[in-house]
Length: 469
Image 1 (spheres, rainbow, N blue to C red):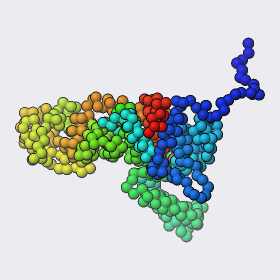
Image 2 (image 1 turned 180 degrees about the horizontal axis):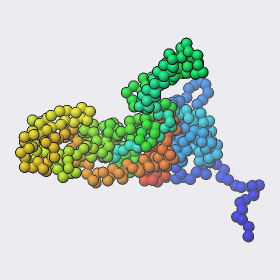
Image 3 (image 1 turned 90 degrees about the horizontal axis):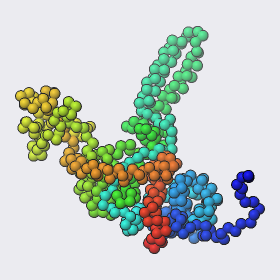
Image 4 (image 1 turned 45 degrees about the horizontal axis):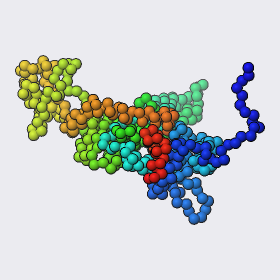
């Protein structure tokens, strides 16, 4: 018994006579082609969308956009690999009409059109809204870290520079003392010229360290090879990718790439971005406790945007939870005081600007004679803190029901998993700088939305609707 064998390489074959016959009618390539075909590329700001009357003709940005959408759809993000796909992939040949741009042209398109790519994604969101794929009544917001194009070794910490500066000062002082001791004395120790040479090297290094400290300013660290990124816990140099995901079919309606590791300053920007993308007068925004921010919650409420976020604050209790917590105390707005369960008054004591809280304290004599003291505090008197914009925090926390948080998890976690491991292949950017990271994420979120729309409507139906738009 022999092996399964293929056909003879000399055997004549009847392949389809055109590329059109090799791409099925319901293929994703046809969806990409229909979407890009009707985009107003010049109006969206794509470079070279209107060719000049003279000179060498450029590649049509529509073709390069199709190439990138196809590439990210199949985890091919490198410009060199996309160049290879143009030369060997029948689907790409159909999509681009057998064009084969070199990798520099492909890479330059992505580098130069970051803002236009984001506007193209917004155009598809508006299409999906008209097609009923985006409901626009509530969105879930979350952030995730994507590695930058830099190694952990490229991170320069201010504390390390301070230690190195102190060590250099000690070494320089030692060399200066050695010079003083060896002046006019003959010995087998290093000569004065050798000491001066070593001292000059140390002083040069000290100057470089001082220059790096000056460049850091108030920052705790700097990434040498990627200055716009930040070292983020568990990730090294990275960017924080923020998304606002619609509750109907988990389409990403707004996104941003920031270099702030914390999420608690992103609630208002993402809420407003989602509102603008949807054109909504009223919107519910669901997020986890990492987005807790009373100032931004109050600002959103004033715009008709209702945040549903658990308040991320310390619980004002003692004794492992056995003592009265803050909910047992009543705040009086008119007098700016608290009333305790025993009816005594806690007055404003001091403000702690760093923590954005005001401390209130009861009188010692009131607590000393109180029958409820054993249930309230083990200290001499009860202290209580109130956060800035406490009322907004309480309203926001009240809306963050267990059901709302369950919906948030089910809506916003899946797109991030797909972006990282189904589109990027690995959560790491290829382009340097925050502008490059934003360009990559603009393509990735658009591809995710295309995948979701194809999943819901089917490739053939989505292609038909895009062609008719």
